[in-house]
Image (cartoon, rainbow, N blue to C red; front, side):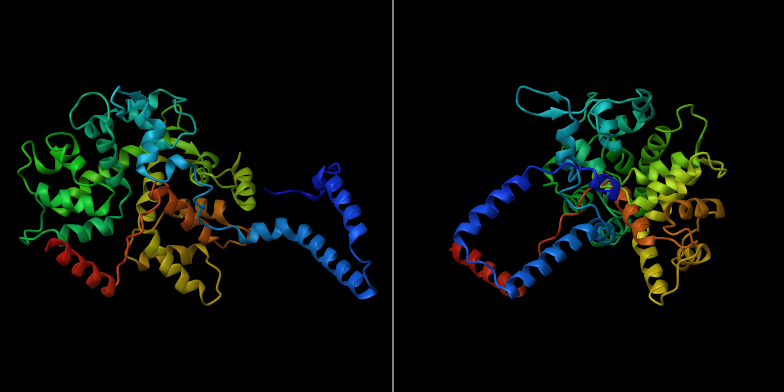
Amino acid sequence: MFISASRSSSWRRPQHTIYAQFAQRTWSRVAPQPTYFTRRGMMLAASGVVAGMVAAPTMFVCCRPLDTPDYLLPYYLRNNKSRFSRYASIRKKNGNRYMTAEDFVCALLATKETTLEDPRAAEDLAALFAATDANQDGKLSFSEFNFLMTLLTTKPKDFEVAFVMFDEENKSALTLPQFTRAVTALSDDDGKSMRSLAGGGILTKLFGTNGQRACSYKEFRQVVEQLQLEVWKAEFLQFDKKRRGVITAEQFGQLIAGQMLGSHLPFFIVENLRRLKGSESGTVPFSSWVSFHKIMRHADDIGEAIELYTASGAPLKKRDFVRAMTAKGLTALSDAEVTLVYALFDKNGDGSLEYDEFISIMKEKISYHTREKEREKVDLFSRTINCIAEVVDSQ
């Protein structure tokens, strides 16, 4: 919360000051009178507290963590299970819950309400819902939803490595059982729910109707990119009400800034959004929103290049940002797209990018705000003890 000086000065005396006066009178009856030196110390301490209170808002702005802390992130976005429980509206007598098409769209778009403001959004994602619905019963189980979210949120590099590690025959492709093991390793799935999806939906596209065909990583990436494209389109259409394929620069900025869920926007981004309102930046096509995501899938790589450059103390200008993308072998954003990014993330109006904020927001967006589960690391000694204990128990 940001508190202005004018507002704080107009506050009435809070009730806790009455309690403080009562405590002071009580303390004066039992405590010895302070000496000159203790009075001086108390005055210095009090002045320090006042100075801290005055400087607190400024310090808060400077030290605000870039990544939204878990306690600020809405509980229903921290993992796939809580997200599913939040939006799934169908509850069976046995306790199982299921998602309707509308629930599904709300979960993907992370809406605050559990109902859609624009019902057309469900129509826009109808094909994706049908592909996710493996048994084609018109509703989604947690297994079906969790599988899709694993495909959308897992880093491409992790899947690329998994396709190599689980390719035991070195055929440059995975069978359905091998792919099931890979997804189990990359998610919280225990393998049982993955096996229940065989025979329909996305897995049919990957491994054929009977699940006997092997799938290469290239084929897998093409399917996942098509799924992601459907979600990005639905996000864009939240602002493109007239379905013209373009939105204003201000709406594009709001679309990006809206990814900071559960956290206050930095003041300079709020101001930049106001400047974009009614600006002559023109309209932004859907292709720019897609380009934005394709670049941000490599946010870690771009961040490394940027950090290497800014370590010299040089500001990150537009040409430097473009050079960071090309240095990592990526197709750079267009001049208009880079200008739009700088219009939103230029903190001081000096033409340099506040790249920490930019990278942080886009990482949140690409991961759909889910937190990666930290893999437990067991040292060699612990592994040895566990192994001995298993041998003893088996005797």
